[in-house]
Length: 359
Image 1 (tube, rainbow, N blue to C red):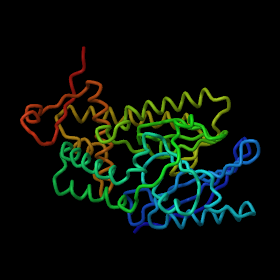
Image 2: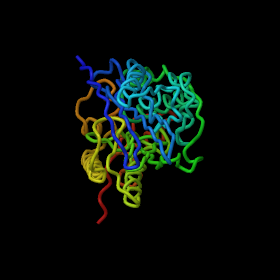
Image 3: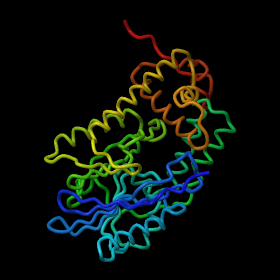
Image 4: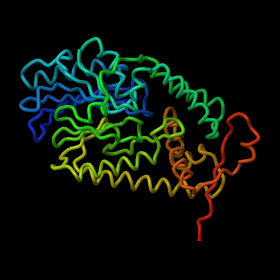
């Protein structure tokens, strides 16, 4: 039996005097233990020389209680600041990346606020041509699951779960893209950090960083192979971590606080980046060890994550696939059943093997 998250709004202030409110949202009703139930949108109020801006960062999933929670968050902010703030007061909505738990609420918001909606170019078509995107990714996912060695009945179940929550969304307008505005909107600065999602960005406001899902406090953000979506994959993600590290180091003032799309705030951003990098090095080593004997991505997934259930099966397969892909790209793996692949016109399960280390 799942537990209902305790929803508690938090308030922060940037070094430049902006007010930031963390709005807790219940994202995936009925998903139990196989998806994060709670996440956050952020309301930033900027006045003075930099303002006025009334900016919502991410929009929730649009599923279950997510939209009512968003409305409740605005009501709680109104009480805290002693004056009303409503959806029609928003000037902008900035989407950190095109995953449903971060943009799904736009179908609810688009008729309730005149706010300008912005997203990175590489995630633009997910919002504006959503139905096309869902069809194409479902097709690629089916091929990936075959090549990963997943049995047919399980493949059908996994694709069904993938599509279930996503069919409640429809294409929405986007008013601007981040590169087109020079990765700046007034005091808000964006950095493109592909990997977890093709168009993922982190957003800086003075000394606070909104990290989306790029860096989270207690979990490593999910990775999937670039075979499924260009500009995703572990190679892009690790390079984006380094890009973020350099961006923070080069800034004129330090990042004091990092606010993610899930979990608690991060006080030591660089330390957390170090931890995530170590975790992926460990997983890559585990993958190489498993591939001393030929096996499929499904078998690598079982070695890395053990027995998992529900939607976590798909997440584990994609994560394992991202690590196998990373090693294969670097010439550390070979395809053991290459002749079988050459003889087949249709996708079949691929068996990888670790190549001997050069002397």
